[in-house]
Length: 126
Ligand SMILES: [Mg+2]
Image (tube, rainbow, N blue to C red; front, side, top):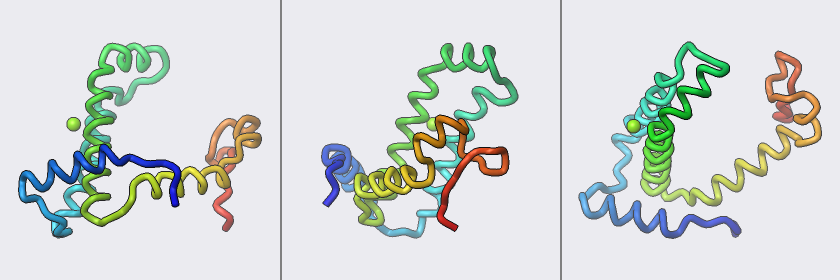
């Protein structure tokens, strides 16, 4: 049993979908998955091709757009979780546990990142 829960969010998602007669039919699952990519693309377009101080400046000036990205993305994730009867808290907890193993804090502090091709660590246990 997961200690982490998102009960109110799951309840709101269920009510939202049921009020629109949006069932759990998975025929549009691929579209929701692509929709997540679209949201990431919208966020990317805010900072595309810039980095460093200019990127930080643009992020600060358009924080509302990133807030929109977070909301839209969480909505889609909860929508998919509801469609597929997946407990998002359990899935999130499993991911955190997996990442604890893959990216040990002491090693990441030393190596700085999780790209083994560039000197980092990502212990997938392969
Ligand atoms: Mg959006």
